[in-house]
Length: 333
Image (cartoon, rainbow, N blue to C red; front, top):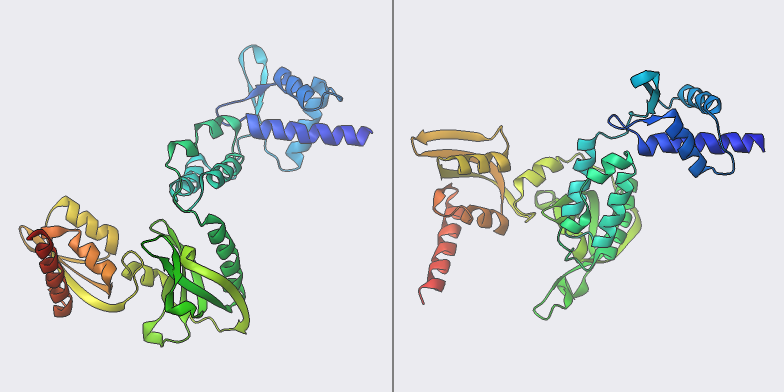
């Protein structure tokens, strides 16, 4: 019984210091004794016993800071955290802003993350109620797909699945009459509010791979027994060349922008600080970059309106011109 009493008190004291103290909050010996009585009412402790437990916890590697207050009163706190407050924000904010995660799941995930810090700091962290309701009704499906695809990637196993879209009636319909996609999975990424699988379709050649697939549009995902050899792929380059995760062939493009703070920083945001940027006049600059020629690229260019002009390649210039003509025709009726 004595060992049980000691174990319960030690665990309770550790929990009290972990949850209720930090660099801005500490507890006196009297407060520790009072809280221990609340945690373990059947085994009250005195100051001598608590001090002994503090030494035991320190010896186990659990850091406890002792400060002397007014009139010589001692105060104790645990300040060593697995995550700094800013790091918890880096984890929590993406969870809250992810539209594919349901509100209930957000609440659960945030509550788990808040347990990694003190009760006082946890109160300052954001709550899901200040963010909009999730619009994705397939979250359970996405969770299931994440688990399956994560396993397939780690085991280097080919996966099979069907793929589809929603029609005007909001009914999900499979592409290619439900044909199975056979994919060598390489990575899972979260981009523009959606989760994607990046992988190689075995029915296409090296120059047409890798490709990406939204997890919420997959159906009947299955891991096969077929293994594959993972080849080194620069997926970061693939993602950087993509616009809104549209696939396409890589090509060198040259764009001429009006020189102002918005356009210049927009280019740096997309192509990085190492991008090939050259000023050509007092009012304009050129950017040359490799990008995937796709509907996503055209949409990004058109979003800049009259502040950008396609210089090359000619084929992209013609496609943008055609799209602009179609837009003009819509408003000329």
